[in-house]
Image (cartoon, rainbow, N blue to C red; front, side):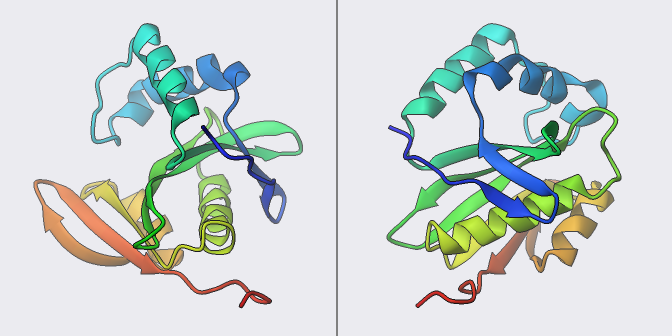
Amino acid sequence: MKPAVRLVTEGPVSLRLVERKDIDMLLRWRNRDDARVWFKHSDVIPRADHLRWFEDYLERDDDFMFVAECSGIAVAQAAVYRVEPVRRQAEIGRFLAAPGMSGQGYVAKACAALLEWCARDLGLQYVYLDVKSENARAIHVYSRAGFLEESRSAGMVRMGLALRKPAGTV
C-alpha cells in the first residue's frame, strides 16, 4: 500500500502524488506523438492498460508518481520507482511536461523537488535514470541537476547522482 507523502515544493512548483482524477490527463500527455518518442517504450498505451498500471501502482510501496503543479495548474509529471531502501537507491524518470509547458523549466524544477524528497523523505543516497542518447534536451536538464553519465548501451545513456543529505538532517 502506498504510504502518505507530504507536499514537495521547489520554488513555485509543488509535487503531489498522482490521484485517480489524473489518470486520463496523464495518459493524454504520455500518448502525444511528441512525448512518447522519448520513452523507452514508445507505443501508444491503451486506456485499459493504463488503468491496470494505476491499480497496480496504488499497491506498490516502491513507486511514487507525482504531478507537478504551479499555481494549481498541472505542468509536468515526475516519478521515483524501484526504490531499494536497504541499498538506499532508486530509479527516477517519467519526466514529462504538460502540453504547452515545455521549455519553461517545469521539468527541471520537478526534478529538483523530486531529488530533495528522495534524499529527505526516502533517505536515498543514489538515484539513476536512463535516457535516450538522442534526447539532448533531457540530458542537459539532468546534467544541470548534477547527474553524470555512467554508461551507454543500445541507444540509451545511464546517468547517476549521489544525493547529499538535506540541510538540517542527521
